[in-house]
Length: 432
Image 1 (cartoon, rainbow, N blue to C red):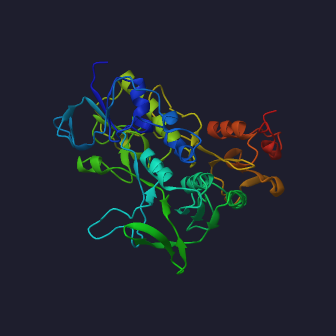
Image 2: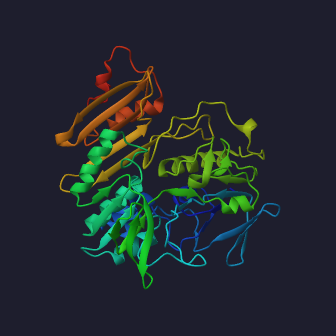
Image 3: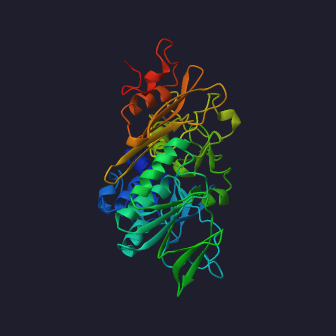
């Protein structure tokens, strides 16, 4: 391929594209691309850092290089070291930044760095810094009870830390789990030695000599802490695109060919917004990279700006969430029409706990809900059926039926009339 393709970003999406096409990859981190999904396992000591490295790219990557400006007229990318990189097609895979809550004491005068011991949980450097600081008995507070916060709390507990997990919402992983599954998850997390506080708002940090010493809660309670992990979600990294004049909403707006408002620039992964949705998940990032590979190889990325007229009128996918993903529906021969993503998580302990969630687990009036719960075995299975379609489900403890259920949901096919809905929760997902 003679087309010069430049990819900005060495995360999941950028690395995937660079594995499939000859590109110039500009990676801001000095490390070779790695799998962020496995960071909690590195923190817990289950994997060495080199184990989570992603397969090599087709061309050597330029690592430790930060892109600072795009000249769309000249079709060049300016880097922080002063170098210019020309492109025929530019792919923005700039990912996302961790959300840092507005806590009193998080930043000093003039926007100083957070106190020593306060970490986001987004990069391998974050992970290794936490490992260096945590010892058995270290008091650690995790702020945020979503998927990332639960994973971080579990990993810190595995290192022997005394962990407190704080969640502002009513329950853990409330975006993915129903109330029953969340309750069972909380019981399991507490069995690992983690102290869990829900409906608990963190208001500030205390420090001494530049090191964090405590976390202040809005109700006036104070938690001693030598380590604070901020797991409050992520936000698309769009500054480079916005400064270049590209259309940005929550993320960088792209069409079904993953083109931005500039026909020579594409965006994929956590930074991209497709049909009004930013996924922020590994599975959709991979699907978008694969779809863009097909678009570029087919030569269909013809200059045409992103806009309503370039969107297909297909029904968007039902909402879902995280780590794993069902196969992408890429529509025609090339292009991307969305991903139905499946959340999967395994929490260790004397009795490891598996969970999976997909689609809409909150029933609407008129929906059919089928669930089986065995609290003594920490097992819960639930599906939501709307009309003749499976629209969501959550399984905790026993995932035997998850593969069949996920395929039925991803395929969006009518359920058989003759089969009782209870069969959906059998080990074969009602396929027999």
